[in-house]
Image 1: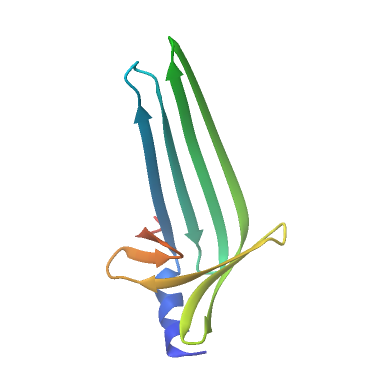
Image 2: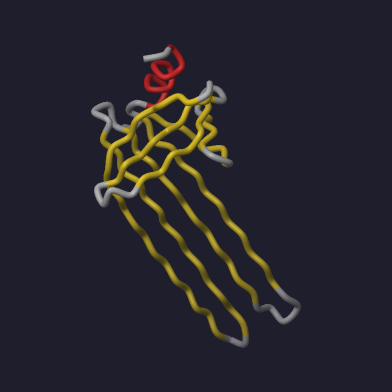
Length: 124
């Protein structure tokens, strides 16, 4: 196992990665929409993983307000691999679906995963 892989395993083991995104738009009539997405990836020392996705959306206009909220939770395993000098977080879920994203430790509490910057916390 390479030094980079070992270093990333040590950096991510027993951590939760969190990403939050929000978008909204309003028009002159007071109507509009709001969308919020939250992602959490729990990476346990035994290489088990939990991926949680929560979303909230609302549309308003003409005196109506339509909220919609959803949440999904997937279980699986995680690992770190290296290809062509780049380090990847690989996740294999219990339904045999897979995700493989390039990752980089950007400093204390910050992790690049794919095209996004995630916050990294110790699992308490």
